[in-house]
Image (cartoon, rainbow, N blue to C red; front, side):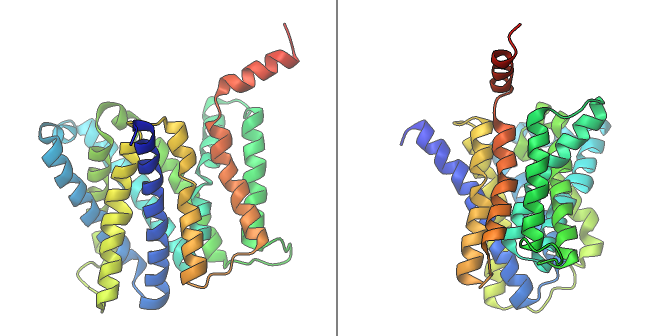
Length: 306
Protein backbone atom coordinates (compact mmCIF):
# COMPACT_ATOMS: atom_id res chain seq x y z
CA UNK A 1 0.00 0.00 0.00
CA UNK A 2 1.47 3.36 -1.06
CA UNK A 3 1.54 6.38 1.23
CA UNK A 4 -1.26 8.01 -0.76
CA UNK A 5 -3.44 4.90 -0.51
CA UNK A 6 -2.71 4.69 3.20
CA UNK A 7 -3.68 8.34 3.58
CA UNK A 8 -6.98 7.81 1.78
CA UNK A 9 -7.71 4.80 3.98
CA UNK A 10 -7.18 6.79 7.18
CA UNK A 11 -9.03 9.85 5.84
CA UNK A 12 -12.09 7.74 4.99
CA UNK A 13 -11.92 5.48 8.07
CA UNK A 14 -12.14 8.43 10.49
CA UNK A 15 -15.35 9.98 9.08
CA UNK A 16 -16.73 6.47 8.50
CA UNK A 17 -16.44 5.73 12.23
CA UNK A 18 -17.89 9.16 13.10
CA UNK A 19 -20.86 8.44 10.86
CA UNK A 20 -21.44 5.05 12.50
CA UNK A 21 -21.29 6.60 15.97
CA UNK A 22 -24.00 9.10 14.99
CA UNK A 23 -26.35 6.31 13.94
CA UNK A 24 -25.47 4.32 17.07
CA UNK A 25 -26.34 7.38 19.18
CA UNK A 26 -29.68 7.65 17.36
CA UNK A 27 -30.36 4.03 18.26
CA UNK A 28 -29.52 4.67 21.92
CA UNK A 29 -31.72 7.75 22.16
CA UNK A 30 -34.72 6.28 20.35
CA UNK A 31 -34.69 2.66 21.50
CA UNK A 32 -32.78 2.62 24.78
CA UNK A 33 -33.79 6.04 26.16
CA UNK A 34 -30.25 6.93 27.20
CA UNK A 35 -30.04 10.46 28.72
CA UNK A 36 -28.16 12.70 26.30
CA UNK A 37 -26.19 14.62 28.92
CA UNK A 38 -25.11 11.37 30.59
CA UNK A 39 -23.77 9.96 27.32
CA UNK A 40 -21.99 13.22 26.42
CA UNK A 41 -20.37 13.49 29.87
CA UNK A 42 -19.24 9.88 29.83
CA UNK A 43 -17.91 10.18 26.29
CA UNK A 44 -15.88 13.30 27.04
CA UNK A 45 -14.29 11.99 30.23
CA UNK A 46 -13.50 8.45 29.09
CA UNK A 47 -12.42 9.36 25.54
CA UNK A 48 -10.33 12.25 26.88
CA UNK A 49 -8.66 9.99 29.45
CA UNK A 50 -7.93 7.37 26.79
CA UNK A 51 -6.35 9.97 24.51
CA UNK A 52 -4.21 11.30 27.37
CA UNK A 53 -3.08 7.75 28.20
CA UNK A 54 -2.30 7.17 24.52
CA UNK A 55 -0.25 10.38 24.39
CA UNK A 56 1.48 9.44 27.64
CA UNK A 57 2.67 6.22 26.00
CA UNK A 58 3.69 7.69 22.66
CA UNK A 59 4.97 11.17 23.70
CA UNK A 60 5.57 11.01 27.43
CA UNK A 61 7.75 14.11 27.66
CA UNK A 62 5.12 16.42 26.12
CA UNK A 63 1.95 15.32 27.89
CA UNK A 64 2.09 17.82 30.80
CA UNK A 65 3.88 20.64 29.00
CA UNK A 66 0.56 22.25 28.08
CA UNK A 67 -0.39 22.54 31.79
CA UNK A 68 2.74 24.43 32.88
CA UNK A 69 1.61 27.91 31.84
CA UNK A 70 -1.60 29.62 33.04
CA UNK A 71 -2.09 31.08 29.54
CA UNK A 72 -2.26 27.63 27.97
CA UNK A 73 -4.49 26.28 30.74
CA UNK A 74 -6.92 29.17 30.21
CA UNK A 75 -6.97 28.57 26.44
CA UNK A 76 -7.47 24.85 27.03
CA UNK A 77 -10.41 25.52 29.34
CA UNK A 78 -11.95 27.91 26.80
CA UNK A 79 -11.61 25.30 24.08
CA UNK A 80 -12.98 22.55 26.31
CA UNK A 81 -15.97 24.53 27.59
CA UNK A 82 -16.78 26.73 24.58
CA UNK A 83 -15.65 24.47 21.75
CA UNK A 84 -15.40 20.77 22.56
CA UNK A 85 -18.31 20.48 25.01
CA UNK A 86 -20.87 22.47 22.94
CA UNK A 87 -19.82 20.64 19.76
CA UNK A 88 -20.46 17.26 21.39
CA UNK A 89 -23.63 18.25 23.24
CA UNK A 90 -25.40 20.11 20.42
CA UNK A 91 -24.62 17.30 17.97
CA UNK A 92 -26.13 14.62 20.21
CA UNK A 93 -29.13 16.81 21.03
CA UNK A 94 -29.71 17.33 17.30
CA UNK A 95 -29.68 13.55 16.87
CA UNK A 96 -32.06 13.08 19.78
CA UNK A 97 -34.68 15.50 18.46
CA UNK A 98 -34.05 14.75 14.80
CA UNK A 99 -31.90 12.02 13.31
CA UNK A 100 -28.25 11.24 12.65
CA UNK A 101 -28.15 12.20 8.92
CA UNK A 102 -29.59 15.70 9.36
CA UNK A 103 -27.59 16.35 12.55
CA UNK A 104 -24.39 15.30 10.80
CA UNK A 105 -25.10 17.45 7.75
CA UNK A 106 -26.02 20.53 9.83
CA UNK A 107 -22.59 20.28 11.46
CA UNK A 108 -21.19 21.23 8.08
CA UNK A 109 -22.72 24.69 8.50
CA UNK A 110 -19.59 25.43 10.53
CA UNK A 111 -17.74 27.07 7.59
CA UNK A 112 -20.72 29.41 7.11
CA UNK A 113 -20.35 30.78 10.65
CA UNK A 114 -16.57 31.01 10.23
CA UNK A 115 -17.06 33.09 7.07
CA UNK A 116 -19.44 35.44 8.87
CA UNK A 117 -17.19 35.73 11.93
CA UNK A 118 -14.05 36.53 9.91
CA UNK A 119 -15.92 39.05 7.76
CA UNK A 120 -17.16 40.90 10.86
CA UNK A 121 -13.82 40.71 12.64
CA UNK A 122 -11.83 41.95 9.65
CA UNK A 123 -14.54 44.45 8.66
CA UNK A 124 -14.77 43.50 5.01
CA UNK A 125 -17.38 41.98 2.76
CA UNK A 126 -17.16 38.22 2.07
CA UNK A 127 -15.43 37.09 -1.12
CA UNK A 128 -17.57 36.09 -4.06
CA UNK A 129 -16.97 32.39 -3.34
CA UNK A 130 -18.00 33.03 0.29
CA UNK A 131 -21.26 34.66 -0.82
CA UNK A 132 -21.97 31.64 -3.01
CA UNK A 133 -21.24 29.38 -0.02
CA UNK A 134 -23.65 31.36 2.18
CA UNK A 135 -26.44 31.11 -0.42
CA UNK A 136 -25.88 27.36 -0.83
CA UNK A 137 -25.87 26.89 2.96
CA UNK A 138 -29.10 28.81 3.47
CA UNK A 139 -30.94 27.11 0.62
CA UNK A 140 -29.61 23.70 1.61
CA UNK A 141 -30.72 24.21 5.20
CA UNK A 142 -34.16 25.32 4.00
CA UNK A 143 -34.57 22.13 1.96
CA UNK A 144 -33.27 19.97 4.78
CA UNK A 145 -35.63 21.29 7.45
CA UNK A 146 -38.75 21.81 5.31
CA UNK A 147 -38.41 19.05 2.68
CA UNK A 148 -39.18 21.79 0.19
CA UNK A 149 -42.57 22.74 1.68
CA UNK A 150 -42.62 26.44 2.61
CA UNK A 151 -45.53 26.23 5.04
CA UNK A 152 -44.19 23.55 7.39
CA UNK A 153 -41.13 22.21 9.16
CA UNK A 154 -40.23 18.59 8.43
CA UNK A 155 -38.03 18.55 11.53
CA UNK A 156 -39.08 19.57 15.00
CA UNK A 157 -38.07 23.14 15.97
CA UNK A 158 -35.73 21.71 18.62
CA UNK A 159 -34.01 19.52 16.02
CA UNK A 160 -33.45 22.58 13.83
CA UNK A 161 -32.26 24.68 16.78
CA UNK A 162 -29.79 22.09 18.03
CA UNK A 163 -28.64 21.29 14.49
CA UNK A 164 -27.83 24.92 13.71
CA UNK A 165 -26.23 25.14 17.16
CA UNK A 166 -24.08 22.18 16.18
CA UNK A 167 -22.85 24.07 13.13
CA UNK A 168 -22.12 27.13 15.27
CA UNK A 169 -20.28 24.96 17.79
CA UNK A 170 -18.21 23.43 15.01
CA UNK A 171 -17.11 26.94 14.08
CA UNK A 172 -15.98 27.71 17.66
CA UNK A 173 -14.40 24.25 17.84
CA UNK A 174 -12.34 25.16 14.76
CA UNK A 175 -11.39 28.71 15.73
CA UNK A 176 -10.65 28.46 19.46
CA UNK A 177 -7.66 26.06 19.58
CA UNK A 178 -5.63 27.60 16.73
CA UNK A 179 -2.85 28.98 18.95
CA UNK A 180 -2.63 25.79 21.01
CA UNK A 181 -2.42 23.63 17.88
CA UNK A 182 0.57 25.66 16.68
CA UNK A 183 2.49 24.75 19.85
CA UNK A 184 1.23 21.29 20.85
CA UNK A 185 0.24 18.02 19.25
CA UNK A 186 -3.46 17.94 18.31
CA UNK A 187 -3.97 14.70 20.25
CA UNK A 188 -2.77 16.34 23.47
CA UNK A 189 -4.97 19.41 22.95
CA UNK A 190 -8.01 17.27 22.15
CA UNK A 191 -7.45 14.81 25.00
CA UNK A 192 -7.07 17.48 27.68
CA UNK A 193 -9.98 19.56 26.35
CA UNK A 194 -12.26 16.51 26.37
CA UNK A 195 -11.20 15.52 29.87
CA UNK A 196 -11.50 19.02 31.35
CA UNK A 197 -14.79 19.71 29.57
CA UNK A 198 -16.17 16.38 30.77
CA UNK A 199 -15.11 16.99 34.37
CA UNK A 200 -16.79 20.42 34.45
CA UNK A 201 -19.89 18.95 32.77
CA UNK A 202 -20.02 15.95 35.14
CA UNK A 203 -22.45 17.48 37.70
CA UNK A 204 -24.89 18.30 34.89
CA UNK A 205 -24.37 14.89 33.28
CA UNK A 206 -25.25 13.05 36.52
CA UNK A 207 -22.61 10.42 35.79
CA UNK A 208 -23.23 8.85 39.20
CA UNK A 209 -26.80 8.00 38.10
CA UNK A 210 -26.13 5.15 35.68
CA UNK A 211 -29.27 4.34 33.67
CA UNK A 212 -30.50 0.79 33.35
CA UNK A 213 -28.49 -0.63 30.45
CA UNK A 214 -28.48 -3.98 28.72
CA UNK A 215 -25.52 -5.60 27.01
CA UNK A 216 -26.42 -4.06 23.63
CA UNK A 217 -26.45 -0.58 25.13
CA UNK A 218 -23.05 -1.04 26.76
CA UNK A 219 -21.53 -2.33 23.51
CA UNK A 220 -22.97 0.69 21.67
CA UNK A 221 -21.62 3.11 24.30
CA UNK A 222 -18.17 1.51 24.24
CA UNK A 223 -18.11 1.86 20.46
CA UNK A 224 -19.10 5.56 20.60
CA UNK A 225 -16.31 6.26 23.10
CA UNK A 226 -13.57 4.22 21.42
CA UNK A 227 -14.32 3.70 17.73
CA UNK A 228 -16.51 6.77 17.29
CA UNK A 229 -14.27 9.14 19.23
CA UNK A 230 -10.71 8.09 19.97
CA UNK A 231 -9.86 5.88 16.99
CA UNK A 232 -11.81 7.96 14.50
CA UNK A 233 -9.90 11.05 15.57
CA UNK A 234 -6.55 9.25 15.52
CA UNK A 235 -7.27 7.93 12.02
CA UNK A 236 -8.15 11.42 10.84
CA UNK A 237 -4.92 12.87 12.29
CA UNK A 238 -2.90 10.05 10.80
CA UNK A 239 -4.27 10.85 7.34
CA UNK A 240 -2.72 14.32 7.58
CA UNK A 241 0.71 12.68 7.45
CA UNK A 242 -0.01 11.51 3.90
CA UNK A 243 -2.64 13.90 2.48
CA UNK A 244 -3.26 17.65 2.52
CA UNK A 245 -5.77 19.13 4.95
CA UNK A 246 -7.87 20.12 1.93
CA UNK A 247 -8.16 16.52 0.74
CA UNK A 248 -8.96 15.15 4.19
CA UNK A 249 -11.54 17.90 4.67
CA UNK A 250 -13.35 16.91 1.49
CA UNK A 251 -13.23 13.22 2.39
CA UNK A 252 -15.01 14.07 5.66
CA UNK A 253 -18.18 13.95 3.53
CA UNK A 254 -18.07 10.20 4.20
CA UNK A 255 -19.42 10.98 7.70
CA UNK A 256 -22.93 12.12 6.64
CA UNK A 257 -22.93 9.53 3.85
CA UNK A 258 -22.29 6.73 6.35
CA UNK A 259 -24.82 8.10 8.85
CA UNK A 260 -27.46 8.37 6.12
CA UNK A 261 -26.97 4.85 4.77
CA UNK A 262 -27.08 3.28 8.24
CA UNK A 263 -30.04 5.34 9.44
CA UNK A 264 -32.08 4.56 6.32
CA UNK A 265 -31.25 0.84 6.18
CA UNK A 266 -31.14 -0.05 9.88
CA UNK A 267 -33.18 2.61 11.70
CA UNK A 268 -35.92 3.18 9.11
CA UNK A 269 -35.19 6.90 8.80
CA UNK A 270 -36.91 8.43 5.78
CA UNK A 271 -34.73 10.50 3.48
CA UNK A 272 -36.38 12.09 0.44
CA UNK A 273 -35.08 13.99 -2.63
CA UNK A 274 -35.38 17.40 -0.93
CA UNK A 275 -33.24 16.29 2.05
CA UNK A 276 -30.64 14.76 -0.26
CA UNK A 277 -30.46 17.94 -2.34
CA UNK A 278 -30.21 20.11 0.78
CA UNK A 279 -27.46 17.92 2.21
CA UNK A 280 -25.46 18.09 -1.01
CA UNK A 281 -25.74 21.88 -1.10
CA UNK A 282 -24.50 22.18 2.48
CA UNK A 283 -21.66 19.72 1.88
CA UNK A 284 -20.69 21.71 -1.20
CA UNK A 285 -19.53 24.51 1.13
CA UNK A 286 -16.64 22.32 2.27
CA UNK A 287 -15.54 21.70 -1.31
CA UNK A 288 -15.83 25.36 -2.30
CA UNK A 289 -13.89 26.57 0.73
CA UNK A 290 -11.21 23.95 0.05
CA UNK A 291 -10.49 25.37 -3.40
CA UNK A 292 -7.22 27.35 -3.53
CA UNK A 293 -7.59 31.13 -3.44
CA UNK A 294 -5.14 31.42 -6.33
CA UNK A 295 -7.68 29.72 -8.59
CA UNK A 296 -10.08 32.63 -8.24
CA UNK A 297 -7.30 35.19 -8.43
CA UNK A 298 -6.10 33.79 -11.77
CA UNK A 299 -9.63 33.66 -13.14
CA UNK A 300 -10.26 37.21 -12.00
CA UNK A 301 -7.07 38.41 -13.68
CA UNK A 302 -8.01 36.66 -16.91
CA UNK A 303 -11.41 38.32 -17.02
CA UNK A 304 -10.09 41.76 -15.99
CA UNK A 305 -6.55 42.05 -17.41
CA UNK A 306 -4.41 44.86 -16.06
